[in-house]
Image (cartoon, rainbow, N blue to C red):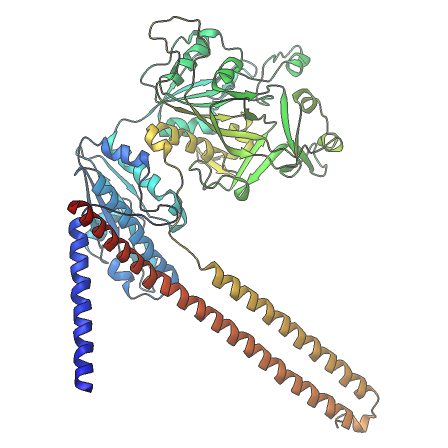
Length: 623
């Protein structure tokens, strides 16, 4: 009988194994190329922008993913184990891109063993090796891309902390290899940002640091507002800073550039503090009384956004402390604002990795009533903010006067934003050749209501080091500008790729249980400490009443007090162990439940769903 049961058990297991293999082979045949992404944030589904970039590849691109597999395989360090998991995430994403590229994207995975030629190639390509272990071997997790014309670019190291922008970074690398031409940036500024001769000082002035960065990264084409009739088609990104009193032709040129699908980065300001309008050595009041505001009202109206060129945002929560005079104590200035990492948008590539931004006398944007456009804030005030007339800030001798009359409106004000929509022209009556009344495709504009954000004094100190000018940044304003232009210099598909979810899914419920248990432990420990202190106090009181001859001998009261204390200590330790035991039991139960759901229930449901689908298909064929 036992033989029969044993034989039956083996037969059943064998039958189940055959059925499992048959189902796997059947599903591989029926659903070849079919993928179902059930992750919460669709981690394994490429965004439309990435698919478009891959679909437009004309020439093959070869990607080499370097990862030190063997060097990290035996490590028990948590950071190295996390890196191995992240490598799988990167590899799977690259394989998904390869499958979507129609053969134009080829992926190789290389393990650069220590002291091998592959390691030399990784280092030569600019990949960053991280030292591991006492012998100093380096581990790599980076990507090198090569196009058919030997164009080469790399991601030096995949930082797990930037997982939300993993798809964007890889798509950007591929796009850069597909389009080898350096982007051209048209630059139109109403401020003296480009350097040159200063008629006021009769000397040469240095270009602003952001402008120097711009010329290093892109092909920059300065534009003159006085004779601007059109923006050349070769311009990929148009940067406009502090446009003041632009004539209709210049505004029309910007208008048509946007409608043609051009990418615009626009800075306006209700009070540009670096604006030297009205400067007259013989009449100091002329500069003080001159307007420092810039605006493009016709274009803003056409784009469906509102901006007040005479209103400045005050924010009590983000006010910077400034010195108003030598020797005076710093005073919080509600018009000079500091934004730190928690205040900045973390799911936008422009601000995701910035730590600090400074703005001064900034304005704000909001969507016009019934506007079809979509406005996404990048920099936003706190709800402890209000707006005042720019003239009030301009003539405020002391920022304390602004705080004295401060009354928060409770509204958050958007100082920088993305504006998306299918824009219409602001000049419907013009009939110039190739005039566009409306954009053919939805476009995107970046708007910033502050020009001081670009000035050196708000973010960088320049030092002269043996004839070399070194930039010592104390804020990330320069990175904000560079990120914005770099983002717009990509294709529209690349710009559309936003930050994604991350694959790391911490067990928050387990963490909550641990935190609750820790709190209970701390409470018990504090209770024990209080009882210990109380016992010591009582012992000291009993000791103080004894003579010198008896001070080293415990009295019956002291002996009883000590026994009570040790007894209570044992009870509390027992309670602590019970708390720990219950915690472990709760975590084990939760772990078992999660394992059942992930390992048993989900595959079972998928199998049943597959069988039901196959049955339905078979029934349809019979009908």
